[in-house]
Length: 361
Image (tube, rainbow, N blue to C red; front, side, top):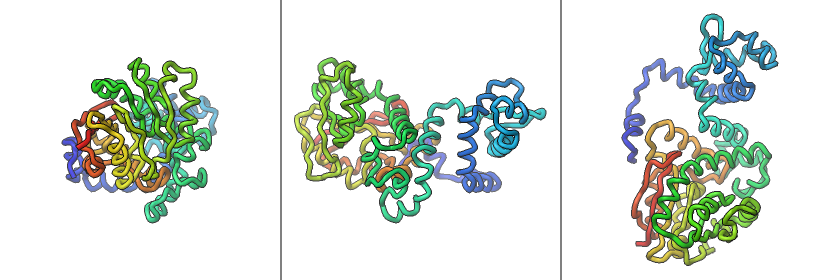
């Protein structure tokens, strides 16, 4: 298994001293508690108060400013102190660098809300999910086979956090992705798993001639139509409802480009191979399949790789029970088994995306 150099350096040799390793073990053991404490330090505005205070604040001052009891503030601050998100100096608490990132890093904020609103309760069922190969944690929300069937019915906070998470990881790469895709001059584009139509809208805005068809579940197509209604270029966007897990259902033909953004990570390797095979069957020799994914082994730093490999367990427990954030070797193997070959790989897009450009063998 190969990795980019920064990751290979990090993950092939144990660089922790014994006491550091012991500390890390206990951090993992208490991780659910630390997570909730840190989330509430953000929600209650304590991190923000400490960040805005040049000299820090006492327990009583935080209690007064937040309206929380002295006891509530005290247990939160003491937990945060030993967790390393705040420091204590001169009888006052101040925010640490880690606390500042929890407060100010957009990605940390998105990940925290996603884990609390979507994953937290369901993760209790991880053992069942791994043993059964099914998203056993999803039952905390409803009796669906996959989370995608129930997206429109999720509770308000969970639905918002899911879409915020999904859009954050994809939207930041769209500008670069548009340049790459339209350098191949497609007149027609099939957006597989197009969700709410955000990419399709960007395409018809970027190129005033292109026509986009979104291929997705029928209920997603209805959500997409509502989302694009009244927006510029909607007349050049159409929907094609289909069950993408039905291996006997062919893809519509005649498209210059087939686009899959953060889509194949929603399927098992066997399913990925089948989907790529159906895409290949719909393509001409001049067509191209563009796969945009956050491949964990092709990240520039270990923070990104860490986030992505943890997100894999969301797929295991909540989404479908059998997919993950893929290593590039696994994804390439599936693409080749589906009848295509990799023409070029673009790495280093924002949010850590890579784009695999695939053509018929």
